[in-house]
Structure formats: structure tokens, C-alpha cells
Image (cartoon, rainbow, N blue to C red; front, top):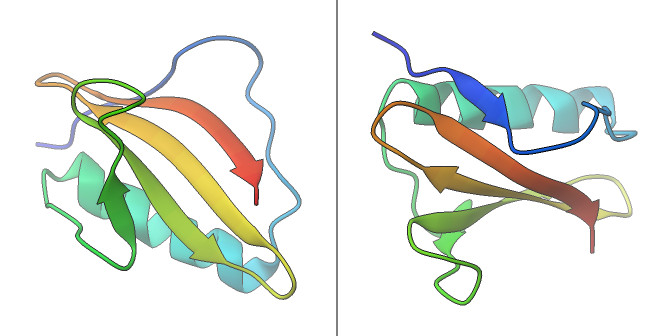
Length: 84
């Protein structure tokens, strides 16, 4: 059974991902929702942000996107999406 995907706060805004980057982000998020662990280079722990926090790394045309998320028992919580 998939976990729900929850935004921590604010309005859900889709960043201007290319089609390929959007597909990659969707696949990686689906894996997380199914309880699979994703390691480097696609995801890395972010203990300085908080316990059980990680960042997904999505490489787009000229931009590297980061999706900061937290894994909880009942949900995957999206904290922030930004370009680097």
C-alpha cells in the first residue's frame, strides 16, 4: 500500500521542470511512496535539515532541482522544491 504524499505548508506549485525532469521526479516520488529506499546519487540524507530528511536530486537541462522530503511511517512529507 502506498503512503500518501503530503506538502508541509503552503500552496502546491509545480516548478518549471522539463518533461523529462517531471517524469524523473514522478518516478522517484512513486518509489518513495511505495516504501523503497533511494540512495546516492539520486537521494542523499540531510540530517542538518532534520531527522529522516533527504533531498532528491533532479538534473534538468540547465538546472539542478532539489526536492527536500521527510520519510515518516504514514507519509512522505515534501518540505521544499527549489533549483540549485
